[in-house]
Image (cartoon, rainbow, N blue to C red; front, top):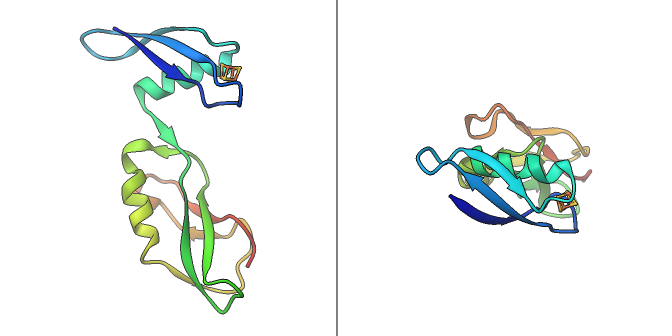
Length: 119
Ligand code: SF4
């Protein structure tokens, strides 16, 4: 089966033509990528799509009431909603340093969420 994707690995945004197995949906090949990162992107996007999670949590004792947070690594796309929902129930106390762990093993992914800035 043939499908189109836009590579989001860099601002060039190459249009990729991806071949997948008709029966299993597994990645077979890609055309249109100007570099190998596009090939990796297409394969990951087809076989196990991932995204970085960015969100905010509440913070007490700081000059702002919300702290931006980010996943340390991309999460499986199917876990994103659960991970973002989990952020709603978290409140931290200032001071927080950029890179501090805010939540461990978010949504059972084994990936931590860290502070995106000091506050
Ligand atoms: S294929 Fe390479 S050049 Fe094209 S958008 Fe992806 S990373 Fe950028």
